[in-house]
Amino acid sequence: MAPRALTSDMSAPSYMQFLPAEALAKLGRCELLARGVVEGFVSGKHKSPFKGFSVEFSEHRQYSPGDDLRNLDWRVLARKDRYYIKQYIEETNLRATLLLDASGSMAYAGDAAAPRNGKPCSKYLYAQHIAAMLGYLLVGQQDAAGLVTFDTKLRTYLPARARASQVRAILETLEKTEPGGETGLADIFHDIAERIPRRGMVVILSDLYDEPEALIKALHHFRYRRHEVLLFHVVAEEELTFPFDTFTKFRDLERMENLLPIDPRTIRATYLERMRAFLSDIESACGRMKIDYVRMNTRVPYDEALSAYLMKRR
Image (cartoon, rainbow, N blue to C red; front, side):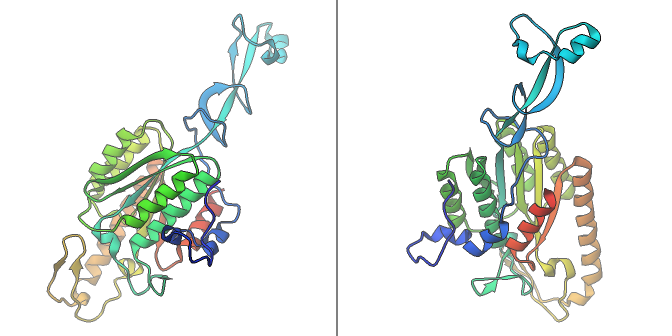
């Protein structure tokens, strides 16, 4: 069993802040199920590529001495006068790896973001909550969840596990990780694609600030390894609309460099054009690769956005 959500009990561990009861209540009976096959050997809810004799018919194969006669297809025998065995797709457990971008740009919290603890929610805090809820959901449905945090290098790597204590390990890792440093998505994704031992599900939580061409190639690496990929593109409202209209000082949150004040009206049109092109390139590439692309605007509370996606995914 996964741990219970945080209540008014003041003795609850601090990491339980990522699983507030009101947020989990919105998930209701939602599940995160694989749409394709996954590799595993434990009985579960997902289709496995390994042939067995369990739930869903897959194909016929010719009878071999020693096969169980109970699985003979007598209709095929009557029609073709040949012996064929019915094979079925086994059901197995899902192994999901959550990839959390902990680079400096994820620390941005615009004024339009949904509040959390009385302050606008940063992109990183937003992604932390989604990762926590997905980990809780996966382990609760007897699947395995792992967590990777990174910037230009791997910070933490928790291999996917299905035991209840894995939820605590994920929450503790989330609590002690702070955003900072530059972004290196492409190299990290190539590394992780080779580390995951069997195909399963890869869930990415990031603002995706990297070179689009390199990023798309790295996403393709996951698909080449036959993983199902969910991409939660976490963005702030201000990044989409650029509402600034007075001289503003912008700071690079990854290099922590202050820039000179500029008039945002002089760059708004160019910025919005490039942002639209960036979003279109990523979303189109995901469509071609059959990657679930989900834009998460921090203006919408994370629990509402996640539950809406899971309901739509059914």
